[in-house]
Image (cartoon, rainbow, N blue to C red; front, side, top):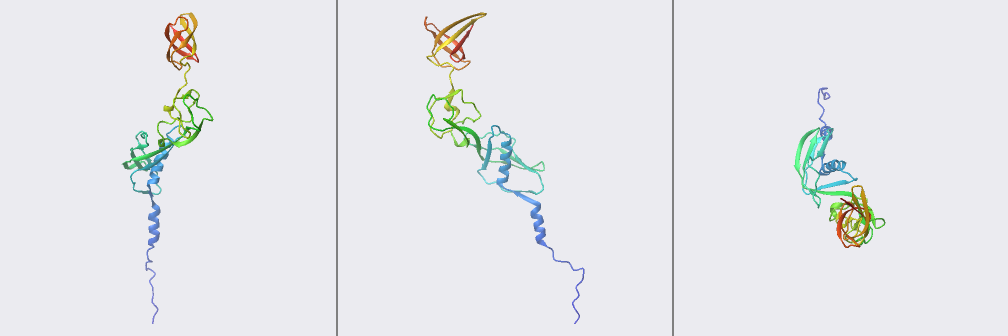
Amino acid sequence: LRPLEVSSNTKKPKDETADTKLTKDAFLFLSESDLLGRLAEGITDGLEMGDKVHLTCRVGIRSIKVPSDAEWDVYSDEPFSPDSRGYWTPEVKIAVDDQLVKSLRLPLKVALFRNVYMAAYRLDRGESLKLPGVKKIISNIFEHRGSPIPANVDLSGFELVQGIPEGRLVTWNDVTRRPDVRRGDMVDVVLKNGGLSINLVALSLENGVMGESVSLRNIRSRHEFSGVVSGNKKVEIIQ
């Protein structure tokens, strides 16, 4: 018997595994986490006060197939304006190599993490806001009622208009500017008329801060008049 001769032109079986790997490596699939993460990064970059954003979607987002070597981005042209509960429904755009490939209207839930003030212990009405009564923490502001005061705000000129329990964030509804003149204060009044100045002492009939008008009473004549708060227990009248 003669040995079986095999032609040198016989083709080898195709390695389908290699082609499959090549196809798989040539593309990547952007998951919901990828898309929302990129959108959150873009929003965070445009915020102040060190705020950070985390986004979740109330409906599922299908993965998007893009070339593995492509540049891609996720953004919205609409203002970042979630409501008081953190809900936001922007039109979200997905671009690949600077070409818009998809546009979706997404119902998003926003977590906005901000450095804010929190009551370290029970604070009462009329108290000043200072350490150790308040401390700074990072918190998702949409988990709290009202508008929490950012920790970069100087609270030295404010006081509480209502009590705050320990552990609650301090909001703008909780505070008011500390009056420079209080009802019942004896204040120094300067009456200016041209180059003439007259100084007297009067009783303040109401609270007022710098620049506000307050009612006064002359303690001798009992005459009532008004003037503009110009400083701590100081009022000015210009005629």
